[in-house]
Length: 102
Image (tube, rainbow, N blue to C red; front, side, top):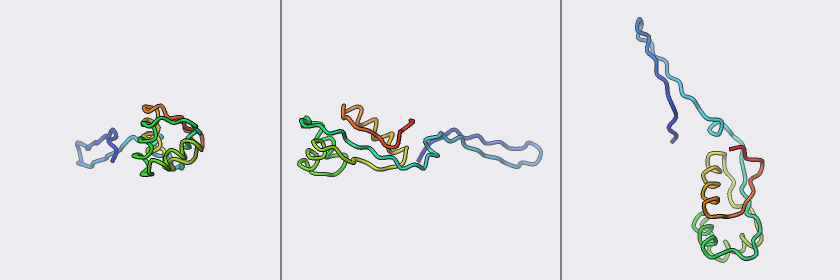
């Protein structure tokens, strides 16, 4: 659920109502984006735990994903932006394809 600015107008003469909402470009973007982890031969334990918790992979599989790199998430723009924020906060190196403009 997104809270967006809405505008409601009522005609003073006939009582007819009009409502509109302003959507951001990211909300209308129907592109499927992919986040890939960049290979990291020596990931720290906290990063591995973070990826395990985020993806549902066990610790060993998360460590392998770090070491080899690979697909982490495949989602629409709104969800990718959320994941990007968490990855940035945890100093995890990744790339997004196609180019992510948000």
